[in-house]
Image 1 (cartoon, one colour):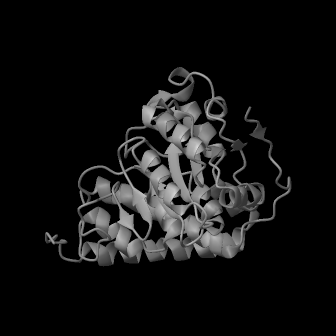
Image 2 (cartoon, one colour):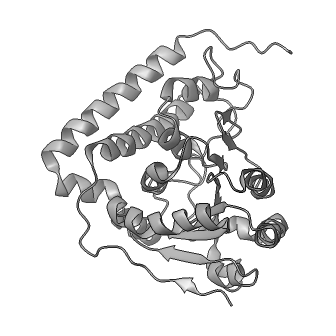
Length: 307
């Protein structure tokens, strides 16, 4: 019987290192800029931001190795920028401009770059991550797959968990549980819990409600190490908050729900905790993303040539 692993991190976590703040603020301003560009008609298709959830991939970043695979979803810009600090290439991909990561054919949701793969198809990446993890057995590397709480309605999730446990593969499943699947509250669309569903497949589960990067790392470092050493899957559930819309301007939550999510925003807390450092880094990140947007928007359209 699988037991949910209790939190073991420090209760009074120190503030995040400067590099983490830089990455957090890069992602925040990148996402805000995407919303602005979309409003101005500069983006085609759709785009989903991770506003409020940026700390999840930033906290995990140093726990992942270069030879790990990372599988993302439709809300994947933060996952990518925490893994690869390449905002020019990512924005060029989203805008379909020269220098795009995938020649502009992937757009906001479908990016493949140096062992990073994102998809807009719910639940699609988890079975693929199991296959990648199977190929990594015995190497010490792992496959990390990000999914949301809404994706637990997909049958592919359970097929993947079943195979992962039977085959003992080094798979880290990161669940960003923000309480709402597009416009449907999780409480009315998912019976049971993520922990209970992981337990059904005898897959260890760990839940954290912390938004403190140093605390999260202290909790997860030994658990991720176990995934590598024992070649076993692990489900890590983050109780997080999406402070922006599902996709652009389609936030269906009440004003009270939006305010509650904003109360948990790391941005406000770190700005208050480290005012001088935060103000400087926030300004630098805003200026950097502004330069990125101006330079990428001025590039010619990307032309994809069939190999």
